[in-house]
Length: 251
Length: 196
Ligand SMILES: [Zn+2]
Image 1 (cartoon, protein in one colour):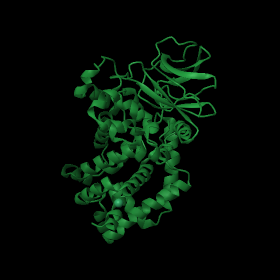
Image 2 (cartoon, rainbow over the protein chains, first blue to last red; image 1 turned 135 degrees about the vertical axis):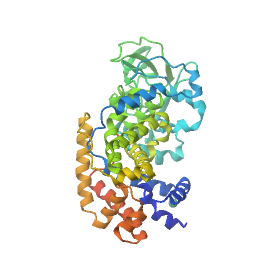
Image 3 (tube, each protein chain N blue to C red; image 1 turned 45 degrees about the vertical axis):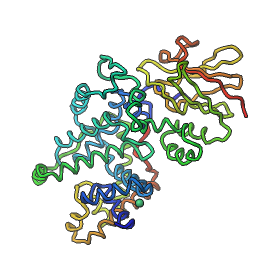
Image 4 (cartoon, chains in turn orange, purple; image 1 turned 90 degrees about the vertical axis):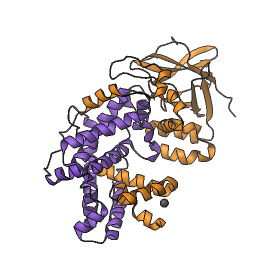
């Protein structure tokens, strides 16, 4: 099939309206053609808009899904992190992402949005442009990353197993752009602290899911630290420091 | 600005990360945001509430088991879930057993208006604009898209239903989708609600 012929199928393909053999041809092509991939993605967004109606799924379906989760076998690697016998609706297995990292790169896709900061410079702008659509928080964080004057602050745990990256602008706006901090249980929050002239000051709460969390860093702050605290935060750190890092001197 | 806290406060991409960490509350939130649209689409394609419920179940269980299949760079979670739902609905439709059911097609109303009021309002606002954009499409393009997407016909079937050449139908679907997209963008509808 020529490229023109393939392209002519993309609209019908996005609506599942091609024959099986055509679908296979298109799929093979999509693996190597970003332009056609983008076109299919666009058609699917448009289709999704056509299908977006205000409606509720019938009662009972969620209960069946939730019951099925309880019967779900976990991957072998789950042995690394014993499954807590927690009731439904609470975190079942902490830090699956890291546990599953052993499974390979596939899982990495799930944290793609967290990985903005790790994108190499040459790919940075393209990737950021796409991610920038994600949310206002992501937008502000990616704007900080694009800013050539921002500083990267690398925070790590003492044993090196947890890490995070903060993008700090000259204005003092700081964004947690990449982290493998686990999602906290309800009722907990991450809190970020600064070391300023020998004193530890709270710089703000990062929430339980510290994705693109934002806070302010005054000029006097030389070091950042993150702890996990009860929701609402505490006036002074009450728990061990999870990750910390020095702020690089301004270039 | 403090971001984060509850799953209700995060965008869809972060929600999927949390699902990847086996947070059932994150899956429940994704369900709250999108199950209505998934169910409505499956119902519309299948004309069978029970089958549509199975599709909903399958779609959210796959999200739970394989959250990494969603790539936020490739589009919205809504579009991802609906594409999966549509594919599953079409599979069911084209299988022999349900072909019979389909012949007994009985109109089934989609579900009652829902418990996620904000999203519902958002969906309704989008639906209004989509309806408007669809109406303004050339009639043959709209017909071809609707027969393919909502009735689950292949473009070849659409061609024979409408008595038009296959190539024409194929390009009408593609052109119509593009036209629709451009129009929706000019109406300010650009995504499928990645935000909480
Ligand atoms: Zn191509």
